[in-house]
Length: 181
Image (cartoon, rainbow, N blue to C red; front, side, top):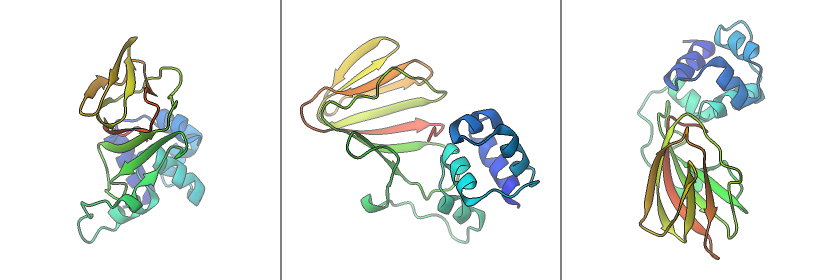
C-alpha cells in the first residue's frame, strides 16, 4: 500500500473530509488530495502535520504501515506525548503508538487558574473522570464543578469549556471519539 492510500484510509476511518484535515493540519486541501492520490510526496513536516490532524504519530503510522507484530498495549508515563502546555493545561496522549486509533485517551492536568477559554465545539463525543482537584465543566451553558470521582460525558458538538476550580493542580482522565488530536 502506498502512503497516499494509507492516509486516505486513515482519514475515512476517522470520518473526516479532506477540508477538515486541511483545517486541522494547516496544509491546503489540494495538497492533501494530491498526497492521497500519490501525485506528490509530502515533506516530513507536511506528513507530520497531516498525521497529527488524523490523531496519530509518524511512528504509529509507519509501525502500522509495516506491522510485523501487534502494537504494545501498554504505555509508560514517559512515553505519553504532550500536546498541550505543561505550564497551563497539559494534555498527555495515552497510546500514541497504537495504529488507527478510534479513540483519544488523555491524561489532562490543569494548573491553578487554567481555563480552556471560550466555549468550543467539534464533532465527537467525550467523557472523563476527575481524579484530583476540582474542575468546572460547562456544556451548552450548563456548568458543574466536579470533584475527584465525578465524571462527565457529552456530545462535543455542544459548546464546552473546562476550568480548574481549585487552587491546586487538577487532573482528569478523558476519552474522545473519534480522535480530534
